[in-house]
Amino acid sequence: MRMRAALAAVALLGTGCSATGAEHTFTPAGDGGSAASGAPATPGSLEAPGAMSTPGVEMVEVAPGMTVSIEWPAGLDAAQQPMVRAFTDGYVESWKAVVSQGKDSGYLDGVEDQAGRDSYAWVRGFVNRRESATGTAKVYAVRVASATGRGAEVDACVDESGVRVTEVDSGRPIDGQPAWTQRPTSVYLQVAAVRKGDDGAWRVRTYLHASYPHERAKECRR
Image 1 (cartoon, rainbow, N blue to C red):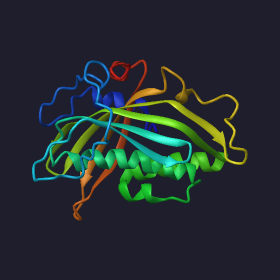
Image 2: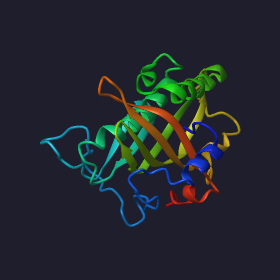
Image 3: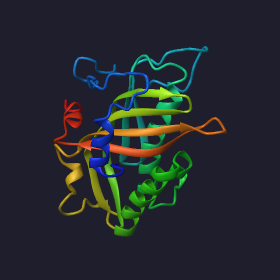
């Protein structure tokens, strides 16, 4: 789910937009730091104030035949978890909108400004082409790159090589799958600028991404 132009993402990533001085380098989960499989992690559910997230793989069923795998990292504190959830929930909800042909509009609740416009256009593209999707999309190496006041940057690696675009009417994969389903293009770095609203909810304001052969996208290879 690439939002906005890759060049815009490259410009952002090259400026070191972290107000907290966070390092941009990271190791994708699976290169010496993979999340443990087993019971899904639930970083939004805390047993006690200040509880840290634990590593785990959460398999989210978008629809029969379509799932999103989210590898949760260890160490997200109670303040960071809703920031990350704003991104991961938005990613899952967008696929729900695709497979429902726009009938499920829940994804619009978690986005605003440019992210809202881009998300709507992305979903409408599938609807207008009468296309859906099956398979598994993977989200991993999720982290909060920076956070200041009511704003934060969430980075994550995305692998959509397991997704197949299908015809809505027949359910069959379309001829000539799009380039974004094939490596190395299918693996990219997604950046989400999130903001906490007056209602206390975090929403995505802007999506950016870095695609291969950009160095930041190469960091997501496994």
